[in-house]
Image (cartoon, rainbow, N blue to C red; front, side, top):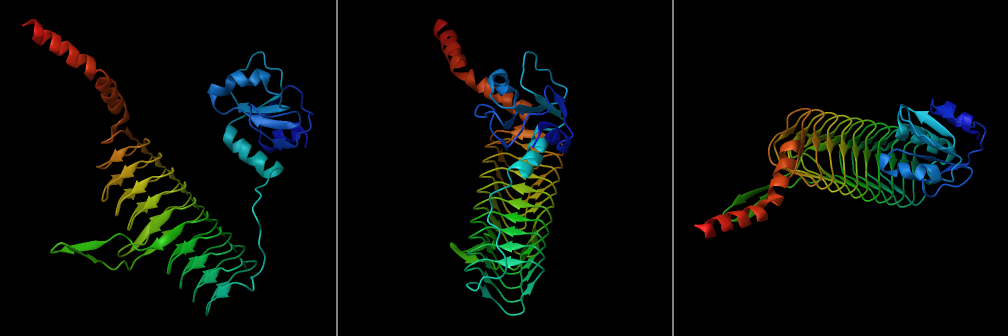
Length: 335
């Protein structure tokens, strides 16, 4: 594929030769002749003059003097990269067809056009699976679950009874959706299980990473809003409501009945207590411990989580405590 064709694909503008033949994509420090690479993080700009790639995708509005390799300027490097990867290097994901004779299909199951079920998958009674959806090997879908169209369910996923997945959802391997919420009543030192009779609703265009757990609601529903992307090893408790287009990074834990607004980013290993609200467009920093509600459009970090600038000042001041103690001791000794 010629570079000029790639530029048209991503609405980019070429600086330099437009005819190099491009066959694949590689990282900036590994790319060779015939490959296109990309520069998204400015910390790697020093690699640009020495790359052996045939072209580099870069951010428009930037200047790269002294660079001889052809550059393709685009509005968003990662969006352009996604388009190029789909064209040149489509994901090597197994596509299954038909209904495996080794699968177990319950009663009154509704399968849409071109829906496929892999080996040893178990589909419970009354399940509906939409058009073009893929249920890969060893998946278990409980009775009454509803799976939309163009859904990809990777191997070894468990979707419990009554759970609803919208259209264009991706669920990576090892994830469990609809397990019981963690609900107990304590009487005289003994913990009695509170029945978890709600469900989980995953809206359209959601991607859920590997080994994620999303608990069903005690009553009502746990909700994952449309367009939200959840990384691996995330735990979402009962009755949590997550808004649209959120990004939830690896090892986040969200306690029960917390409400997360739209376009929220929760960075890795953050922990949120229950029954709080995270406002629209808020950002929660990595390893934050969030114990109270966060207003819309605010960035918080630290433990306990505070407004990010304040949290940074506190960290700087803590690092000065040792010297402060020394200074105080010297003053006391002079008395």
